[in-house]
Every structure is written in structure tokens, then in C-alpha cells.
Image 1 (cartoon, rainbow, N blue to C red):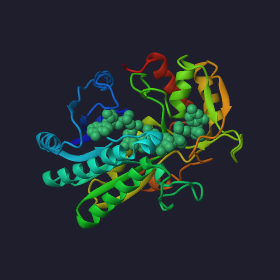
Image 2: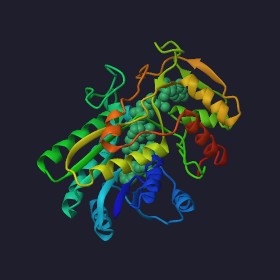
Image 3: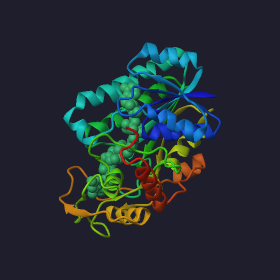
Image 4: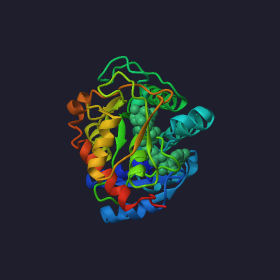
Length: 336
Ligand code: NAD
Ligand code: WQD
């Protein structure tokens, strides 16, 4: 079976291609390379011994999408393609609504045109806004604090409405908590452009000497050590979660949403300590004011995925920092 992986050259999509391949599902990658490197394809080949089909294209380009879907007899779409920087989304909201919402609608219309009925969508725990209770389950109220988050809320709504109108369609929204780590080979990982927004790549770049120190945003939160707590999930666990969701619901229809997290929260200081152990390097840090829009604590109730998908995360924080360091030390400047 062949599936289209939009954004498949990016961080999460590329790792998911490996998990799909291992499950006997053939990924066809569709990506405009706006936030990824063509060299990902070579790295995927080194890992899987397979050259995946790749189409350089934009999901706004309906004609190219339709041609790709038909030529490859695509049966389902794994939709990762999106812009993802929270701060940037507040500065350029229209670009985010266009790329993440309008383009997704274009793609859904194209899927309908060529008769593809199943989509697995990269949603985010950001759709829960400021948590009203912890751990967060899938019935937690939906909201957002920034345009990026609203794009995820809106696409979920579009998918739900579309499934109501077309009762043989399937849409699974996977709400990721904080994806981190890298493929255990060290051949593939996360390499953000510019200064990293997220914690793990910033720590990794500090450990490898690209940055002098890391700012810890806030040490006065109501958490055990005062720093923010998040549910970090290993990228390979996240990848297998996609396969599990697809296989469990392949013959179903309707709109479904699942949390993909470990259910455990770790503080910024705990992540830095684990990284120091993995790298055998000191990670210098300074306490800085809280980052605007940040919440104190966030972690998943991951029991629905366990129950319905027979999936749980298996890799712990030390594996996340070990693999992150393995990748960062092999490729200090990413693939470029
Ligand atoms: P990424 O930027 O590494 O990957 C996204 C890929 O999509 C890139 O390769 C980019 O070139 C491509 N792309 C973007 N717009 C496109 C378009 N219009 N047409 C074709 N290709 C396009 O990001 P990622 O971290 O792998 O995230 C993948 C998905 O998961 C995104 O939808 C993101 O919002 C979501 N998500 C990410 C996180 C996270 O922390 N990384 C958390 C929750 C949800
Ligand atoms: C984690 C913790 C920071 C950087 C974001 C998006 C979310 C989702 C995942 C896509 C927090 C602290 C961070 C630094 C720090 N993305 N931190 N110094 O904010 O939980 O989630 O990425 O859907 O939508 O908002 O992740 O990695 O940025 O931060 O102290 O240099 O690390 O304050 O407590 P976050 P993060």
C-alpha cells in the first residue's frame, strides 16, 4: 500500500516514513522543501536501504497533488506539511492561515476529487490552550493562545465537518505533545533553521558548542523545581503512533482525535541534567524571565491511544537525550 506523506522531508514526517516502511507501507514524500533539506532523502536511504519516491511540490498546487496521488495509487494521506513557529505565527498570521488552513482545504478538495478518503493529521497539544486540568485527555476544551495553534484548531474542525458530510471519510487528528530526539542511528534528527525556538535543539546546540548558554524561561513556576514541565515524547515513538493509528482505523470512518504523549512530565532542569549525562558535557544555563504565552505544566493522559490503538510510548527521557546527542554530535550543523 502507498500513502502520501506531505511534509515528509521534515522532522516528524521523515521519521514517520521509516516507521511506515518498517510496517510494510510505502511512503511517497511530497514536500516543497521550505523547511527541510533534500539530503534527508539520502539519510532515509542509508537507514532503510530504500530510495523513497519524492515529489518536490507545494500542497497549494492542486494539479501537481492530484497527479502525484493518481500516478502513485495513493490510498491515504499523512499530512505533516505546515509552518510551525508559534512566535512567527503571531507576526505573520495570514501566511500561517494560508499555508496551514487554506492549503489544507485545497488538499482535501483534491483528495475528494481523486477519491482518497483517509487522512492522518499532525495536530498538537497546543489545541488545549491553557490547561484547565492535568493530565489532559481528549475531551479537554479546545482553544488557542496564538495563530499557529488556531490553525490546528481550525483544521481539526474542517476535518470533523468534512467527515460529517462524507460518512465514508476517515480523519485522525494526532495531538502531539513535545516531540524530541532523533533516529537511533544518528543519521536523522531535528535541525531547525536559525536560532531554535524549542528546548531540546537549543540544549543540543549548546552542548555541541554552537551556543554559549541556554536561557531557562522562568524558575518561579508552581512546579517541583520552578521550571516549566512538559510531556516530551521520543520521535520514534511518535512515528510508530502514526502507524498504529492508521492500522487500527484503516477500515473505519469518522473524525477521531488522539493524544500522543508519554503521560509523564519533565522540567527544563531535568531535561538539561539528562542531556548532560548523555553528552558528558556541561550545558551552561542562565535563568531568564518567563517566555510570553508559556504555561507552567503540560502532560497527556495517553490512555485512549493505549486502549484503542494498542500503542504506548516506550522510550524514556534518557533515550531521548541520548539519541538527540548522537545526532547532534554526528551532524553539529544539521544536514546543510
Ligand atoms: P518541519 O518544519 O520539520 O516539517 C514540515 C515540512 O513541511 C517541511 O519539510 C516543509 O518543507 C514542509 N512544508 C511546509 N509547508 C508546505 C507546503 N505548503 N507544501 C509542501 N510542503 C510544505 O516540522 P515538524 O516538526 O516535522 O512538524 C510536522 C507537523 O507536525 C507540522 O504540521 C507541525 O505543525 C506538527 N507539530 C509539530 C510539533 C513539533 O514540536 N515539532 C508539535 C506538534 C505538532
Ligand atoms: C519547552 C519548555 C519553555 C526554550 C512548543 C509549541 C507547541 C508545540 C511544541 C507545535 C518550556 C522552556 C524552551 C528555551 C526554555 N509545537 N524553554 N528555554 O513551548 O512546550 O511547545 O513546541 O505544535 O505548540 O508551543 O515547547 O520546547 O519551546 O519549550 O527554558 O530556550 O522549555 O519555557 O517550559 P513548548 P518548547
